Length: 204
Image (cartoon, rainbow, N blue to C red; front, side, top):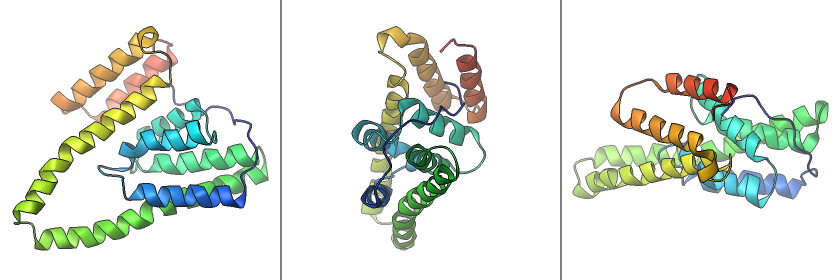
């Protein structure tokens, strides 16, 4: 997978109702981001690429790859997704930049506000009741859910590059990276760098 941002996709301008739907979508998705925003990437792909056609597969994948390689929280990929939605809607020039900034604002406020308020309240309550059996059971039960959501994200990102059997190098690299994350303490940046290099060489 290379990290070069794909070209702007041609699409019809978004209406105010479309922007409202984008904001409300991220507001609702915010409460489902168990294990971090990256765990909801499959549903973002469904909404942005498959359902509405606001992004292309390469734009979606590149947004995640660039944000994961950059320093800072991994939620930054949502800002890049919003930027690309705005750029696609506004086209080149000042209009595209303005709508790109609007896309960033709507997506980031939408995905951060509900979950931040809920986390603040839930953390206070959980700390006060941390010795309850139900609280301990909830924490243990969420671990496999988070792992499943992350595997679904890997599936969506890898599937976008072609049929499963014909793209075996990418699937092999995905499996190796998953094993390294699970069984070693190798820093993620090394794996991101290796993936970018293999993609630049055309091996995956």
